[in-house]
Length: 139
Image 1 (cartoon, helix red, strand yellow):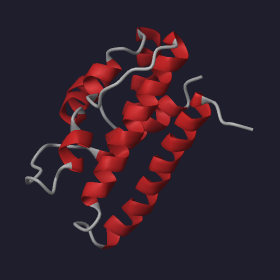
Image 2 (tube, one colour):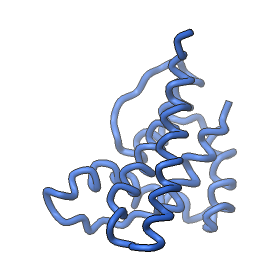
Image 3 (tube, rainbow, N blue to C red):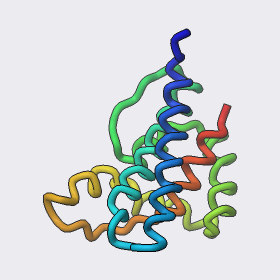
Image 4 (spheres, helix red, strand yellow):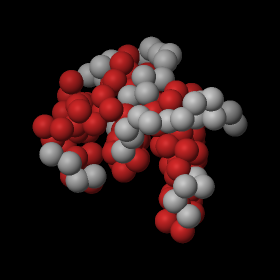
């Protein structure tokens, strides 16, 4: 039996989040070795999770990597449901959610090409991981 698009999305999100968990364990022992792959996987899990919610609600398949732009395509009720859950898990004041999203919006693109130039951009791995996990729960 073939998997549906939503099942593929969910499998990818789960796989990237699981890799984040494994990389985090390695990073705790040797911080610099896996920081970049961890950031790429966390951001990509987030991207796929956002795209999944958009497709569930609208039926539209969207493109792009910028998390802020993708987030803007999620309906307000879903955003309102997810924001407090993410902020509680991080922890983070809800008033700072947009600030963190903006600062993490280009993590995937910035970090996947880190070998080309030093990465100096802010990213918050717990924020990205929590956002992906909470979006994954949206039905």
